[in-house]
Length: 151
Image (cartoon, rainbow, N blue to C red; front, side, top):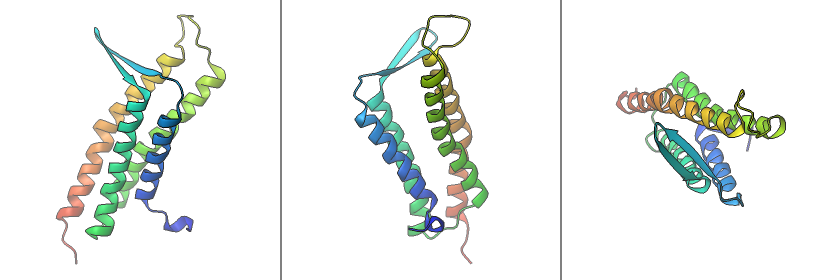
């Protein structure tokens, strides 16, 4: 497979497989704690990995279905913006996890964020970025491709 033949849906499917593999191979029963006002949401990492891999797989499936099955051209700049935000957030998250494990301690010193707080804040910001910017761009791209007339 040549580098020029890699399509955007291949990248999304590759990331979905990596997320699922990391979630399944994680030996710890760790959780993500999300605090919203006075309510805590506790989500197991395996469940989060399944949902995220499904999200990335469905994004890839949407691109594959439009390009291969329906033969509809997508707007390149919208596809680029969407994929940079979604795939870039995945890469940024893992770089942050690596940085936190190497350089930050999980001490109780309260003037700075500890590891888990920094990662949780980053996850929330990435979620907001994906839901309010990347997902509408994807929807606009899909709708313009579906309703555009082929010449």
